[in-house]
Length: 476
Image (tube, rainbow, N blue to C red):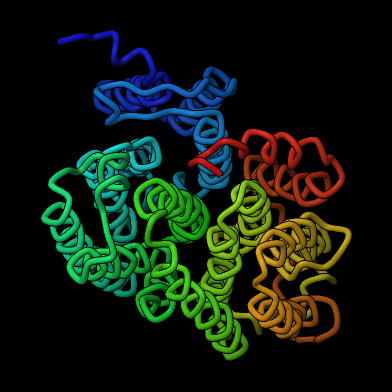
């Protein structure tokens, strides 16, 4: 065996090292040293992120099964940044009495899912793609059930397992049809051999359906709100941004690398999915009072916006997709950080509980307001620019009606995002949440997210760099 093939897997190997170190620390570390476990996990992941921050040159190994490129390296770095922010937000939560005994499992399993996402987006073969997908999916069921003493938590885990198994089986059935038609699992070979045959199209549809479950596209979204509500808030925030961002990018990889010859088939399918996802996500978000369910339907609609970058099918579309995921990570994690801070102190997650919050906790209210403004796409925050770029990429390819529908839905989304702001700053309540100070780690995470919301729209070099490395990707 040629072990030089592993040299390209710098990100995966360094992440495995972090996982192994944390495993031995959790297993053999003294009870006194365990108090620093969360800090150690954050430091190791930060070091691994810095070690891999320089984008790799395009290359492949294992006969093309594993592939790397600058845009893939950037996506991995973005996923790392989001995971690191989730880890920092989780420090106070993992110190709670009912969680501390499972603290090691939380960090190690989360990193295992990240490793699966690495493999998924670097795959050049459906075998490695599916291994990465399952490695990313299965540990999440355990994470959702972390607070197993709560009925909602293990109910959510059961729902997630059933949906994950069903979607994986559906996708695997579709891939078997593609293999039956082409006789290969390599992306490049499939792209050269696949034709507009009924069996291949059934395989494509089944694959899209399986990925639709992972991304929470309508009509494959019904699990999302229940799982987001039942899971611990830290796991919900990870699911809503990191898992979704990796799945969307992986879908873009497969569609552009494997199915470019049948673009006329999958583009109309995505067209309908995008309209349904944005519209239904927005309409159902208006009805929600539980903030975790609220952000669940918000994330469904955001998935529809992200998909505009795929349907654009251009370098601008790919660049705007990656930039949108980056902005979405900061915006959504800022909101979940505030929810986590309040939930840790009061165990309250209803929108009505936030009435008059500005009077007692002005800093948290300001952070939540900026997060809502960015998610809604209100200028001059980063969310406005991410929506602008992704709308422009779709319009550039002639999808004017689709962009118009997305714009109308953006106006609708302003209403329900501003409901949260209205509750905090305008509504008054005698049972307002008392003033409190959240943990230093949580304050750091929220501050970084707010800084990202403000600066990502101003520092244009970030989008420019992503846009430049998008050229030449997938033959665009």
